[in-house]
Image (cartoon, rainbow, N blue to C red; front, side, top):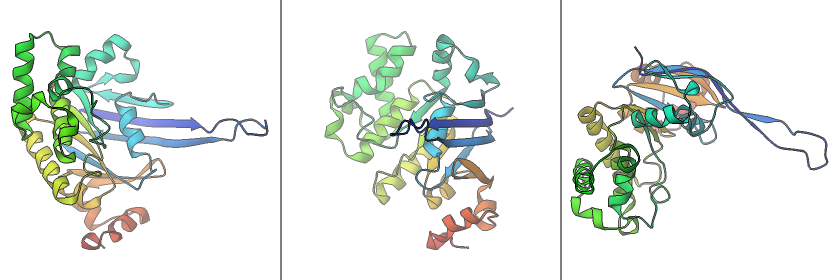
Length: 263
């Protein structure tokens, strides 16, 4: 059974009222009738230019934004039918890694508190057990456990993203949405984070939806690639198939924009 099943998912944002009182200006179909599945243990790379709807889709899947219509099944469980209490329990199995390593961490909280926050909400643990768990998580992402006493501003962008990844791993989720996790980092640091995510996927048995505008990054990490354009999935398939034999003109334009991947 697929870990995640998305069916005809749609999100429409109204544009608001006309300044002259002439009624609604219209609407934006940020995500338009999207369907796909993700198998356990795989990485689906979701690639497209800014404004294509990638991040909105990721947030819809986690119900951080409510969809207009469609279905979302996680291991056969209907996320859209879940009430607040049920959704809270389901959130143990699905987490997000944010794009901005600077804005996604509360600057007033020490690293220990940032990483422990999911444990405080979802687990009954002693303070000593939580601290030990946080130290273990930091070690797993390549940070010294002594970092628990420091604040986010004391770390580089790459280190902050490692802290965000540790937080996402705290509850041992099955599924992670990685929303452009390396786009705010320089190339060498971004490569380290991508390699870290590949290692963690093996060690923790993770399944990723990896959102990116970079075809080379997606090609390296993803099992399959889905190409998003104007809110729709215009092409999806095995990574090498999409890269070597693209069918849609937009996919070809993305590949041709990257010299080493030009077709």
